[in-house]
Image 1 (tube, rainbow, N blue to C red):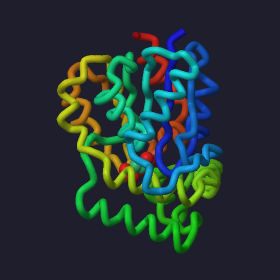
Image 2: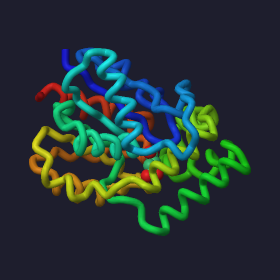
Image 3: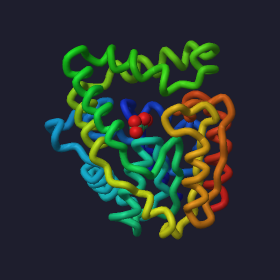
Image 4: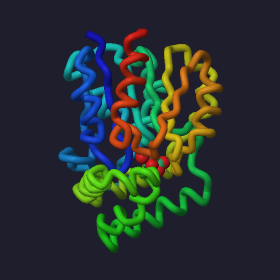
Length: 246
Ligand code: MLT
């Protein structure tokens, strides 16, 4: 049975994939919490987090489960970790699914924003992080018409530990540019965008998909940055169709 590794985004945990885990029963779905997220506290200090250390942790988990090459599916920060897999562990990636993500590194302004958000988390707590991020991660339609999703995402952010948030922000700030990698990818790739994603807009994702030889690209209507929770049926259909072709 093909294994699919789901890698969540920031500042979320594996439950952002709960609809996919319930629906994609034809595959062996593996959806861990990254170190410092959800229930995976770890003993790390905030300075020890990087895309490389997240990837190392996931490879160790796959080793522990005796999983060889897997389909690696990441959303946003999870996508940055997929790029890390492709750079360092290409033999472990049978195919890749990139949702609501981008290849470019942070601009100097974005890096300053990471430090400012880390200071917010440390001095004002996780509620202030949720207040700042919520309007950015969800589509306007979700904010207006899906109160249960708004509540679920708020609660998910609120349960993340501050050390993990600050560590992830350092990892995000210092991540490498993955743009040079795109043209070298030789495995099947699906790129999934949200039509109202303010963080990784669909136009930029389409451009990224065009740079990956043979990549498939789809846009999820009525979705912001959290397509698996905002429009689960459409995302499940896209994932099912892609996985079914492998
Ligand atoms: C995420 O969802 O993982 C974040 O939006 C990533 C980012 O801020 O670059």
